[in-house]
Every structure is written in C-alpha cells, then in structure tokens.
Amino acid sequence: MNAIIPGVDIHVTAAAATGSGGGTLGTSAGLLTLSAADQTIISGIGSAYTGNGANNGHNLTYALAAGSGPGGVAAYADLQATATTVATVTYTISDN
Image (tube, rainbow, N blue to C red; front, side, top):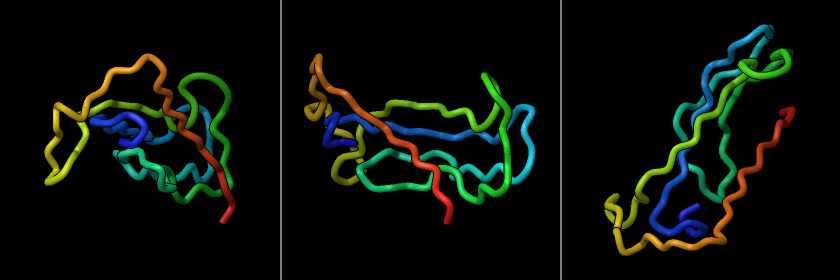
C-alpha cells in the first residue's frame, strides 16, 4: 500500500467474533499492515454463522500510521497530499 499512499501505512485488525453467531468462527491474525500481497486476516473458519447486522461477526478496525521507510524510519518527505488517491481493500472468503 505504500506505493498507493507514499509515506503512510494502512493497518487493519479483526476483532474476535461477537454477536449471536455460533460454530467455528475463526481466529484473528491481529494487527496487519496492508500491502499488495495476499494476507490471511482470519484463519480457521469452519462451519459457522455470525448473525445479521451490526455487532455480529469480526469487526474490522483500520488505522493510518507514518510509513516505515528504510531502516524502519518514516521520512516526512515521503508524504504527498493528493485529492484523488484511492486505496481499495478486497476481502475474499475461500474454502481450503
């Protein structure tokens, strides 16, 4: 994602499953830094249902952070303001 928004990292965290569901709801990988590479955010999903509507399932939290440049240090000069930058995150549920 740094290629899309230079100088900024986008993090996502999936909370533990909540709500009226049941079954094998899976386990969160914790805090992930989004990138162009595929990543598993929730593993071990089995036969399950989460219920419908708000507060059911794994709530996702997004956060922005200064990018981790060379040596793990962010460079202020990497930040670029634009009015048209769009970052798209795609989620896929697959049966392994």
